[in-house]
Length: 456
Image 1 (cartoon, rainbow, N blue to C red):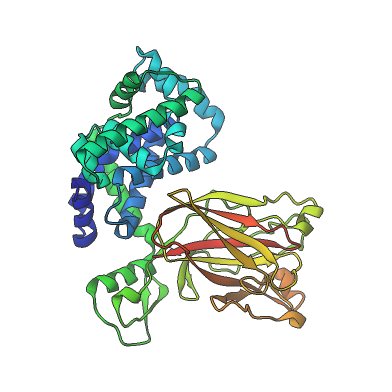
Image 2: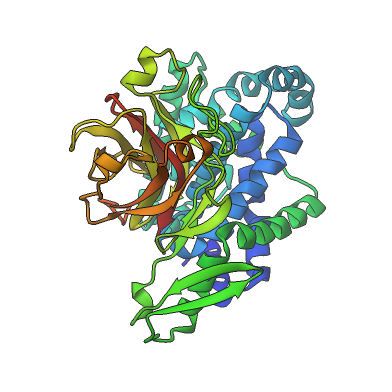
């Protein structure tokens, strides 16, 4: 077991915050440097990315594989976090700061680095996971071949060969981007120019904030279930209802600890294109919204969800009316393995014939593989308006009507509104999911989602 793995194990098994802080101190430079390159040298935004990454690590640590290469996991998490942050920042302001920031943070006397740093992470992202991990361990972290081999589960000689092949592959990718460097020069630049240190006070602040944020973000219900599992107590009763902070939380009882799911809610902030409190479909009935849906963290059909907005996809009817909805949302960040994916969703516009694929979830795994989960009319999804002459139940056994309510538009017609909760089994629960795409089937109706939760 590597030093990083030991520290992570101490944090997961014993809850040792000191071990987590030490781990942050060891790996902060790697995460911070990735963020700096992605964010054009903006130190403040890089610190935000680092905090996001280590918050995710604190939340997901207990779900990581025992043989995960932590630097590889952190590198990918930092890339995704930085890309998500970029989408929310004003690109013009970032470009204006680039010149001064990079002047301070890069070796100005080395023209090779000036040529390399803008395209380095893009090329690294195209390497296979094994090659990327080899480069990260050897050059970004300056590890010996013996340490690289131990982390990758191979011999020292095999690690040396793996590193050489990985470096050659990276050089070939860089040449396609117009960056030509001798192999030896590339190795030196990667070793000397990819790590930026930060003041100890910043590292300590990020570690503390990550631990606090992880505890808050995971949600009361999830932490309750996790605490029950760690006690290894066999519960016999059907359910346990408690009141925490004024919120009613239901913990489903189980016979063996291994049967209890661990839930992680997904942050869809960057995907929301509709508000819960206002009409998000242009020109539609006034008062047709989800204001009566409980906002924030709540349990629906036994699963905790974080409900803060609407992710509305396009459909043929809405497109013919000129409504500017996207046909897909790409890159919803996950960064971990899970057994099931739960979504809280429904259809807008008019329903299609039963069995029509109106949307799908596309899972992108860390090894480059993909899987597609279909969302079919009347099986996994229903119209969000409850029409008296078309009252149906979803036919998929893993889908239920999880919430019903009303709004002014439906009340005037004597109707109700509803949302379905669907549980999809992950076809490859042993693999890490990097991102999920939410894609419209471009049927007549237009599906939308308000929350997504992973079950480990």
